[in-house]
Length: 204
Image (cartoon, rainbow, N blue to C red; front, top):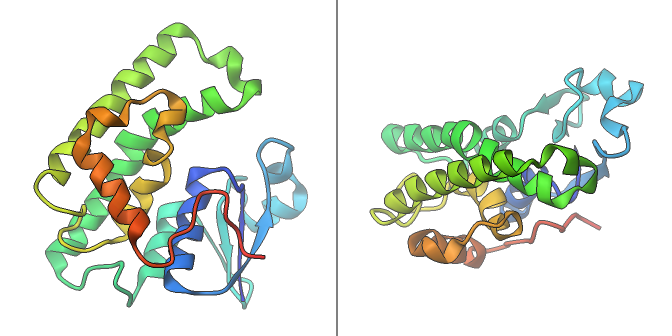
C-alpha cells in the first residue's frame, strides 16, 4: 500500500490525498508536521533530505517528494492527465502557475493567519502585499475560468486539484472569493466531482 506523509491541514498535503480519494486508491496516511519538528527528525530526513511534506512512499521503499510531482505521477493513465498533448501542456502550465504565482501569495498569507507562531512575520506591509498578489492570481484564474470550465479544458485535471487546495480555503486568509464568480463556480464544480473529500480528511 502507498504511504503518504503529511500535515492534515496543509493544502500541499491535501492535494495528493484529494487525488487519491478521487482515484479510489487506498493509502496509509502518516502525520508528519513542520510545527513539532517532525519533518526535521533523523528518520524523516532519511526519507526526504529536504525536510518537507508531502512525501509519497511506494511499496518497494522508493519515495517521491513535491506535491505537484506526486500529482503527476498518480494521474498517469487516469482521467486527471489529459491525453491530448496541448491540453496536457495546459495542465502543466497551471501547475507551474500554482507554484510560482498562486501559492507564494495565497498559501503564505493563509499560513501567517492560521499559525500563531508565525504572527511576528505577518507585518502590515507584508500582509497587504500578499493580499494584492493573491488577488492578482485569482484574477488570472477568473479570466481562464470565464473561457473554460476547468484549467486544462472541458474536464477536471491535476491542475484543478492543485489549484483547488488553497483556493477553496482562501477566505481563511482574507480573500473575498465573491469578487471572482467564475472561480467560485469552479470551486463548486470541483467539489461536486465524484469521491470528493475535504481538507481535513485522511483514511481511517
